[in-house]
Image (cartoon, rainbow, N blue to C red; front, side, top):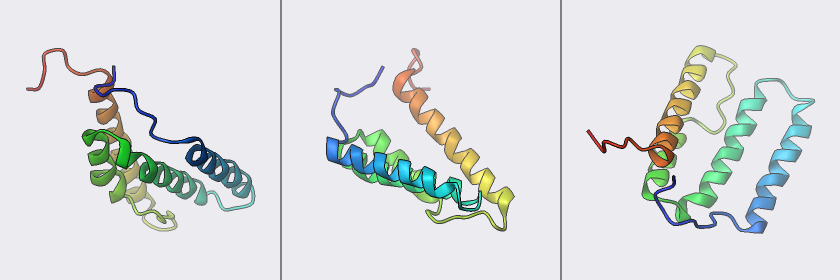
Length: 111
């Protein structure tokens, strides 16, 4: 379970802004090259991160700063696709570790 008291990290206007970006990005993606899909999703992730970080836990803020911010916002994999995919894989692993620590902490505690 979450380790912090429930707090709204987005107000309705902020959530609508993110929703509008996601919906319009989905529509735009229909005519764009496939490489732009990950870029649009990472842009949305960054927009969400910007909104939640000031109101989030220290651990979540650290994930955003230490992990999400390490993937370039406009990284379109035209060259170096393997490196790009590896960076996304590492970002997914880091997020999984953060979520596991937040919602399913080791009952034995830190090592």
